[in-house]
Amino acid sequence: MTAVIVPPMNVVEVLQKLIRFPSVTPEDHGAQDYLISLLKPMGFTIYDLPFEGRGSYPVKNFFARRGTSGPHLCFGGHTDVVPAGDEAAWSVPPFSGEIKDGKIIGRGTSDMKGEVAAFIAAVSKFDSSKGSISLLITGDEEADAVNGTVRVLEWMKDNNQIPDVALVGEPSSPSYMGQSMRIGRRGSLSAVLTARGTQGHVANPHLADNPMPRLIKFLDALCALKLDEGMEYFPASNLEVVSIDVGNKAFNVIPAAGVAKFNVRFNTHWTHESLEKKITDTLKTVGDNFEVSFIRGGDPFLTTPGAWTELVRASVTHIMGKEPELNAGGGTSDARFIAKYCPVVESGMTSKTIHHVDEYCTLEDLEKCELIYLEILKRYFA
Image 1: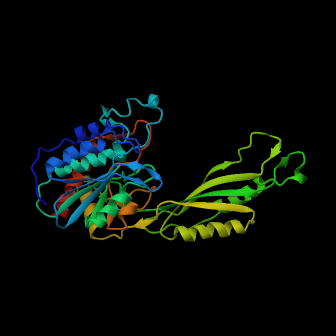
Image 2: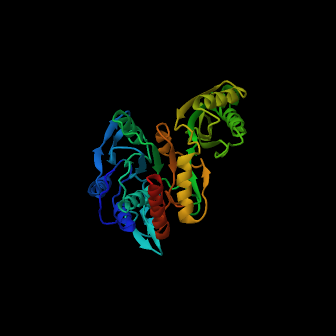
Image 3: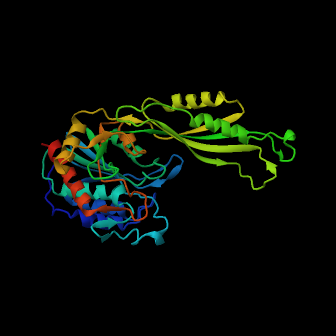
């Protein structure tokens, strides 16, 4: 890695400017070009990697690398954010990055423009000639995740750019900075369950077949499932019903079908295949007049604790004065794709206001995040 001396960046200013790009998935509005303008003077080679197709929308991504040899550390991040929602409910414009009471308020401050800004600011203060630093930045993490990180990783593999280790800047602590770091994530499986019947008049139930009592029995059996007790680092797998609908606008019509939707978040005790079989077998114990279709989300993964996880943990402990918990909770992230190529750890700020109105990070947490990333760089390239 060729060290390039540039003026140290102010992480607050970097984040404020980054927030001002309203980069709601899959729109970019200049966010990634701004990051590239910061990385180029630091000696990074930029690979512009837009992808489209595969049944999803076009996405802007880039890969940046400084250095050509190992060891190779890659930071994975995303510049896309979820919509602001009711902008009138915000105390400041959601894409302003205003500072109030020691907080930067704006969509993406914690998830995860703050962490991206912190890593780039840390790199601007890091002087080393060892190995390689790279960044995988996508604009497709918050929605389909089809033409983003997974496509960039395919390109990286084809072009001999796979890192030795990866750090993903997801907000990893639920309550306070340095509380935990993620070394895995649960998988996701969604399903649509349909109970069939025969439509008719409510006054003549003998001439109809009401599917709703049957649907309730199916759902009761599913909700009673105790999938597992949890595992080391993982909470218990859980099934949650999220919708029940018949589309019936009348009070005097027995519907022909009832439809329910549910989602399962599951640990590495299960695969998509084994979980689908368990659900189907459970439904069959109630009856056979049903249809169920599955939509597979992310696979569960676990980075086995070792040298990389301990280095990140020691860095967080050094800055925060308290050792973070290792866990595999939360939803899904792009780390699930990276885990197929190299050890990956998620470490960032708190998740307590992500996707909320008035999402924010404190100035103190942002500066601590930068210090943690700088400590990780120093230890990894020592």
